[in-house]
Length: 148
Image (cartoon, rainbow, N blue to C red; front, side):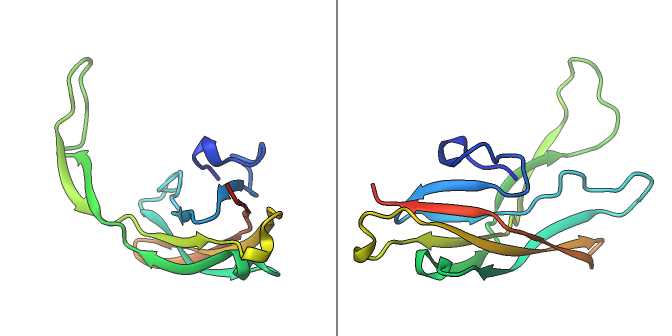
C-alpha cells in the first residue's frame, strides 16, 4: 500500500497496514489498482475496486462524509501496441477514462482539542477478471487525525 510520503505516519508504506497522519478537514481518497493486471499464462484482464468499508470502534467520529466517485479524466495510452524501436517515441493518444475512488473527510470535535486519534477501518476490495467478480479481499489501514 502506498501514499504521498508527506502524510506517511511511520514506516508502513509498502506493507499491508498503511498508516497515514493528516490534519483535520482533509479529504482522503483511496483507489485500488492491481500491480499485475494479468496472471502468468492467463489471457484475462484484472481490475480492482473498493466496494465497501467498515469503521472500527470510534472511527466514524473522525472519518465522515464517505462517498464514491468515478474520477473521470483524460489519460494517455499507446495508440498502437507492439514492438518499439530504440530511441523512437511510441505513438501516444489521449482518451477519457474512469479512475474510481472512495473518499471521506477527517474531523475532530471541539472536545478533541488535545488528542490525535489513530483510527482503523477496513476496505472490502473486489477483484474482477474480464468484468466478472472472482474474489474479494479486505485491507485494514490506519489514519491519525490531528489539529494544526
